Length: 148
Image (cartoon, rainbow, N blue to C red):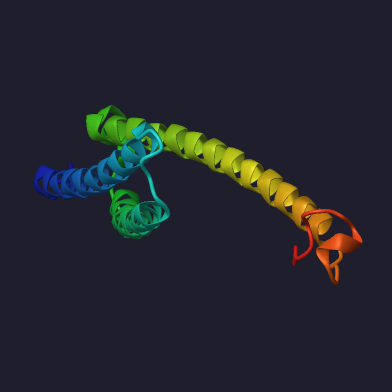
């Protein structure tokens, strides 16, 4: 019969690792929620800073998850099926996925809008380049004599 003390110690270790992982993902979720809930108040510097913070948190979560996975592989997984922290972690990761898809959709819409505006600006620039500089305003009788 296996000794229950090492299993209890392993369970406590996994519990600690899971709580650490959950905390990392909750921090990521908090940032995604803040980004998605604000109504146009995000400026490029703020978005960049939050993006960098999310990347750092993702790296920390990946390291915590690696340790967690290694520890879980060394244990008997039979009792892990009813572990509520695994379910909580999975729910948080699912919420992060939903926010990621929402942010991706918003980003693609902004990208499309900017591409359209750039195309319009380039078209206007090409039209303005079609005007030639006139030596005197009286030659064409118009007001566009120095449009470059």
